[in-house]
Length: 120
Ligand SMILES: [Zn+2]
Image (cartoon, rainbow, N blue to C red; front, side, top):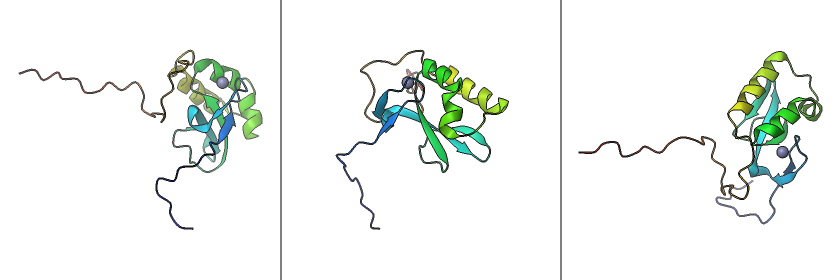
């Protein structure tokens, strides 16, 4: 297959949030993946393995952790998995920032820009 740089597709892949069942463009959701090491958050969206998608909001993760994650990934969550996902969810905002989703989702959100603290 030839490489096609900057290919613009009209088709936008859609995925369902397993927490609230809302269908959204894939980029607006966070992927989790079932790996050999357990269930992990896949911020690249490219990790091999069975994946599922969840909103970047805490409430959806909490809902998802109660069952849908295990169902979607067809795996039983270990305590460690559960803990890991729970901890990740704590870094997310409580609710969706409605209507202000950036075009490209930034993985490292919340990082302050280097401020001009070098007066002089
Ligand atoms: Zn959701």
